[in-house]
Image 1 (cartoon, rainbow, N blue to C red):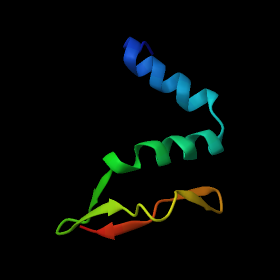
Image 2: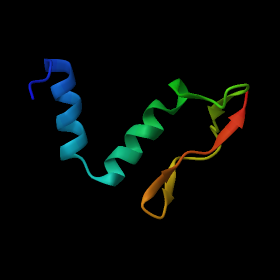
Image 3: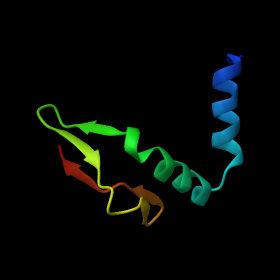
Length: 64
């Protein structure tokens, strides 16, 4: 499968970074993330860093 140049860079980042590096990236962009549950919107809690919860990344959120 052939990707666009921009998407190829994203795929390279995904494949070539460690879980810890991905976590650092999530912390870096956390101020631009917003989550929805269908009715409410949530922002990333700026008092808590993204951390591991087992093998998953735990992103703590607060109601907007």
